[in-house]
Image (cartoon, rainbow, N blue to C red; front, side, top):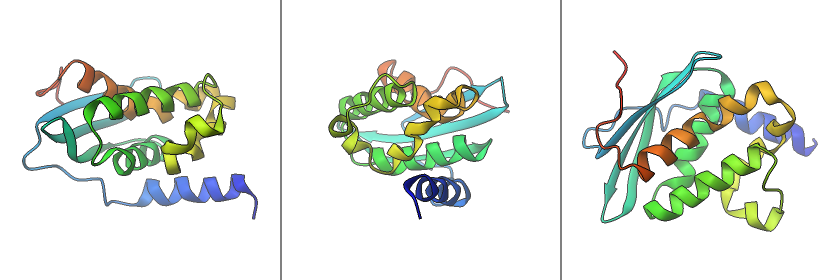
Length: 151
C-alpha cells in the first residue's frame, strides 16, 4: 500500500469518526466557519483555560475533506497553548497552499500531514483549511461568542 492510499484511508476514517463531533457544555470560545462555494459548515467550540486549549470539538456538515480536516485538527490541538495552536494553524494553512514544504517543519502536524497533497487540488483547498482558518481567527481575535451562530 502506498502513502497516498494510507492518507486517503486516514481522511476517510476521520471523516466518519464522531469522537470530536459533539457540543461542549462549558466552552469558552465558539465560532462558525462556512465555505459558501461548496456548503461546508462547521461550528468550533473550545474550552480554553490559563491559555491552554483543554478541549475542542465541532458540529456541522460538509465533504469528507472538511470533516476529516476538522477532526484531525481537534486531535492535533488539544492540550496546546493558544499561541502554539495559532502557529500550527498557520503552518497547516501554509502546507495546504504549498507554501510550507520542509518535512522537518511539518512534523508536528502529525496526521494533518495527510492533507499535504491537497495543494494540487485547488477546488479542495478551501475545504481542508476551513476549520484551521476558523480556529486561527477565533483565537487571534478572542471570539468567545462568535461573530455569528448557525440557526
